[in-house]
Length: 279
Image (cartoon, rainbow, N blue to C red; front, side, top):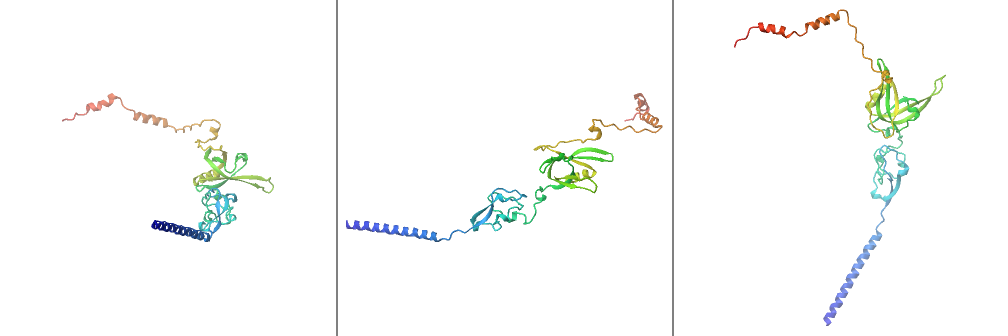
């Protein structure tokens, strides 16, 4: 009986010592966690929305966020004023740190070259209020380019380009001495290198007009062009036969007689007179 009592006392003491040891270990871990230095955070510029390539980064698309210093990219911008107003040379996505290597250099003016598609060239042509659809063509509209050429024997009007984007419209007041001031208008179009050659040629040889296209219509229409005759509904006049010199008719008749096929009887006579070949 006494032996059993001693065993119970020993077990209880061992359990108490084990519990105290575990509690002490856990308290030590808590104290160590309490003395760990807090994570250092710093500010970095993040994009609130997507910013497309070749677009100006506005201040309302940016925000400052405090993140751990170890998570900041080495090229991340730290101030919004260092980013706002600059041009994105690569796409910037929402919730992304804005990196300085994705922005155009400081001091670079936002020109037309940043709004021009990579496969296009900007070309400016002179138009007037009537040619420019009475002033109703605006940047972003799409037009057809109609050329009228009157050079030598060529008198033709034709749609040479279709569905061309208008990049800019500019007006300038010109006044020569002794004349009334005149407003000149120019339109800048986004063209492929091949299209710039076409426009330059027809603009040099004739007159170029712009025809405004309806919004969202991109179909291409094939046209034959128009001349003075076709514009007024006249058919093309066939070319008159050239006059023949004297004696030509007699020579033509003699030639026809010489090559006229002979009758069957006349062709058979020489064949009957020919000797028969022997076997």
